[in-house]
Image (tube, rainbow, N blue to C red; front, side):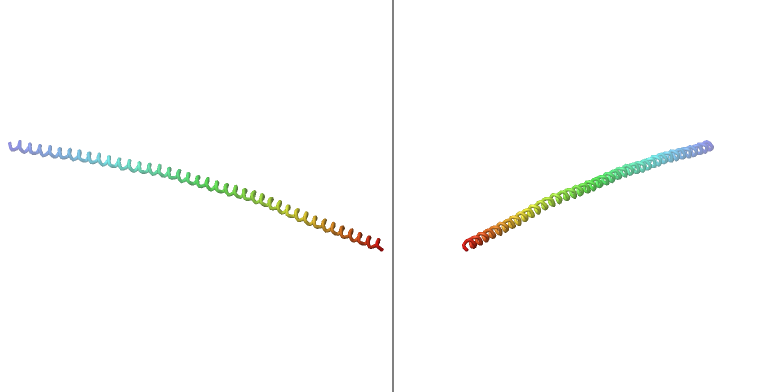
Length: 144
């Protein structure tokens, strides 16, 4: 009986040990699983983050490129506008110059006309004076 008891105890001990071992294994397995799960999650998160960063970078690059093109376009338009304004100014100046030259020519023509008329008048007056003088001389001569 004593032996039986001992044997039973031994058996019980062994079983307990086995159970503990099994439990330990189960526990380790569970821990391993949770660790792998969390590791997987972490890796996935990191991958997702990198992917999002890449997308954001591309979007920003596109935006930057668009802005650059817009600025270039604006600069080009301004350049064209300045060119156009310069051309317009030149045309205006040319027109003004033409008008001024016409005015000047008119003035000169007027002056010429006036001086011509003056000369004519003087000549006529001189001729008139001479005629009168000749007439006077003639009368004077006839009286004698």
